[in-house]
Image (tube, helix red, strand yellow):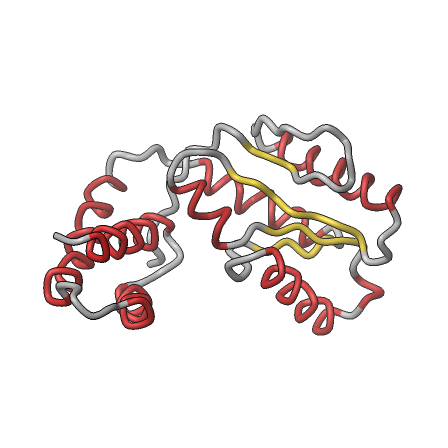
Length: 186
């Protein structure tokens, strides 16, 4: 097995265990990153094996996981005027673009701020190193942005999460001990 195969196997595992991708999605990711010299047959067969491993593991998970509580927190944010997006693009820039699209759909009058995590944050969460959250207000007002950060922190803490944040509107919120267990969609 070469380095490319190892890298793509890691990507497959992250996609599957993230809970956001189905088999077709993972095969599309493989299409996007496959390089000459990679063992395509082995990589393609690894997708179904990884989904099988995850299905077996899901049977041992508690009824409510941290990801379920995270979903609840994001629903609360969305219903309180904060655009809250999960797996929003792959980078900060992608996430901000996604926020802009939702803001356009909802209208500015119904939104006071935003919160999201992107694909790189998701990779770290699946790997067990916590989840970083970006947030902000619509007017780049530091006091308002701090208020949005405090609101998000309070919502997350009300769902039982320990949240690290120094109160600086230019720093991100962190959930350091998130146990990433997102069930596959039914």
